[in-house]
Each structure stands twice: as C-alpha cells, then as structure tokens.
Length: 193
Image (cartoon, rainbow, N blue to C red; front, side, top):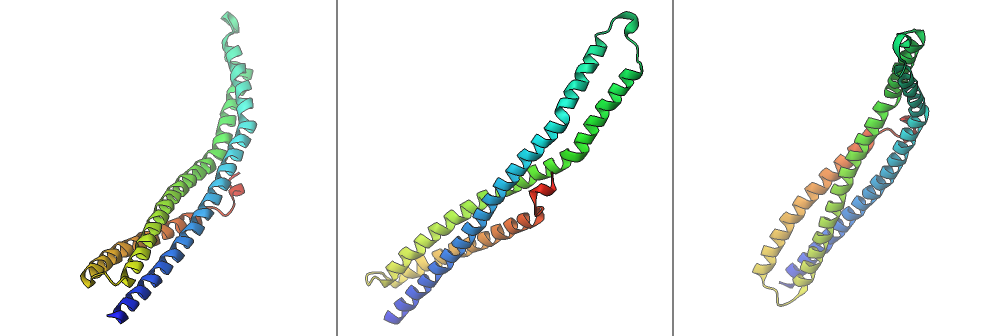
C-alpha cells in the first residue's frame, strides 16, 4: 500500500511539473502576443497618421474648391477645364489613398483582431492550467495522507486525469493557433507602411 501511495505521489508531482512547464510556455507565448499587439497598434497608428497627412488635407482643399465652384451663379456655372481638372484631382487623390493604404491598414486591423482573440484564449488557458496545477497539488498531498481511502483516491485521480487531458488538448490547440497567427503576419509592421 505504501508503494502505491509513493507511486501516486510521484505521478502527481510529475504531472504538476508538466502543467507548470506548459503554463510557463503559454505565458511566454502570451508575452510575445502582447508585444506583437503593441507593435501592430503602433504601426497601424503610424500608417493611419501618414495616410491622413498625405491625403486628408489635399482632399479638404479640393472639396472646398469644388464648393466654391458650385456657388457660382448664372452664366458662370459651366463645366470648364478648371472644374474638370479639380474632378480628376479629387478622383486621383481618393484612388491613390485607397490603393496605397486601405489594404495594408485593413490587413493590420484583421491581424490585430486575430491576435486579440489568441491573447484571450491564452489567458483563459493559463487560468485553467493554474487551476489544474492547484488541483493536482492538493491531490498529491491527499495521496500521502494515511486517512485517504483507496476508492476516493481512484475516483479523484480519474476525474483529474480526464480534466487535465482535456486541458492539455485545449492548450495545444491554442498554442498551435497562436503560432499560426504569428507566422501568418508579416515580420515587420513597417512593411505595411
């Protein structure tokens, strides 16, 4: 009986170490996700500010010129070469801003959204790992207690094992999806700008 208790305690201790290692790996991944989120957010802000600095003001001026042209009265209200050039300039400014900045900004926002989802999943997985670690630690101390019945131990062991296996599967899935999301994004936020 003592040998079984010692084997069980050793198994629980090993399991606690495995969970602690998995939790440490998840925390490392979470830290990397949070750092990448900061970089993506800064890059997105810079790209949006750059686009605004290059195209917002010229569009405002162009639109105001069009407003002044529309305020003409009577015979002066004709479609002349100046108005045609203003319309062409407006279209060129809008198209250039859209072609150069909309797609990278949209992609960066999508990546940021995926990263936020991965961060939330990692945080919940870390919390579950912590709970599993606490449970296994408690079960480990119960195993060494002489008042614990074998039946209670076995039922707790099977429940804990099934819960931990499910947590392991979930953790691996989260790690893989986080890794894929990080691998899918460009290596440098500056590549979007």
